[in-house]
Image (cartoon, rainbow, N blue to C red; front, side, top):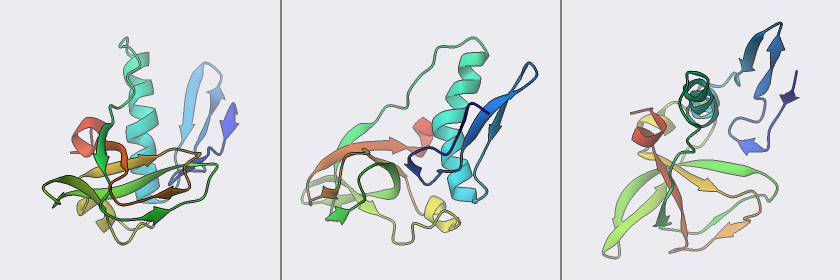
Length: 138
């Protein structure tokens, strides 16, 4: 096992290692965590192993519509929808964020990637938005 547990929410129990010559990825058990870990980490790995270049998902900086607090020390992928807000497109947090809440995926347009050192967002702060289309989930 090369690593187990990463500083990301949802998805902390992600594992990676080898069995013989085969690479093995262990995804989290909750469906939202598994989907997001696959889209953000495993899919780019598989594309690179198939001969393509590693491509990080492109985040589009968009304003958050409201305040949000988070714990420092981990990256958080917050499910969001795109909304009109004060004459521009903004990100609105989906209310139920649990890693087992599948409706948080069906109601969202993508995720806001909140950096590991970030502790608070104020309305209007710009954060990277990763659309589900960009992540291969649409």
